[in-house]
Length: 243
Ligand SMILES: [Mg+2]
Image 1 (cartoon, rainbow, N blue to C red):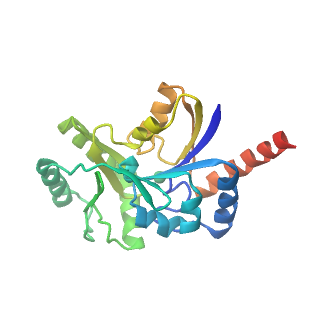
Image 2 (spheres, rainbow, N blue to C red):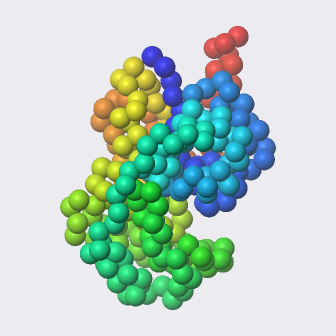
């Protein structure tokens, strides 16, 4: 039985859309040398490399970009899902941008990535302040959860989950983070760390599938500092077992 460690990136290894902390990065690189580590994130490859650095990226066994729709081992592309968002779904998203009561529109609301779309009411071009305003609004109104549910109900072939701080990840049904499990055999025990393990969260489908198929365990974290603490505890246990 081989233990594999799978990590979300935004809000789990880094601040949302931000860079990894240098002290945590040094610790995490060492962790990657002694353990089989995989990343699974809604972001594309350029963004993840910017966030964690190429050295950390290349220490991972495999990186699942775009919720597993674009798969990489170091600089080698393993596979890419060619799905493109249907026109009717695109139209509905534009309606959401028009109708939301949130006042700011920063631009780049519908970002097409390999095999998926990242949708944001405030827009990917938002400043940190504008993003913070949206987070406060969304925490109050639960707008993203509501919109994700509308999309999923309206289009049975589409899956929509809340991801990162301001976005919704949209793709083909079944093309959420749980799709990565097809690469892991029954002989593996997976430990998955994510900050969005709640209903409607983009880590939830993978956490649910792990439980359902008894392939491992999920650890819900509050932020990257929480991941750091949990891994330090794990590492001290590993060291005791080794000694
Ligand atoms: Mg996250």
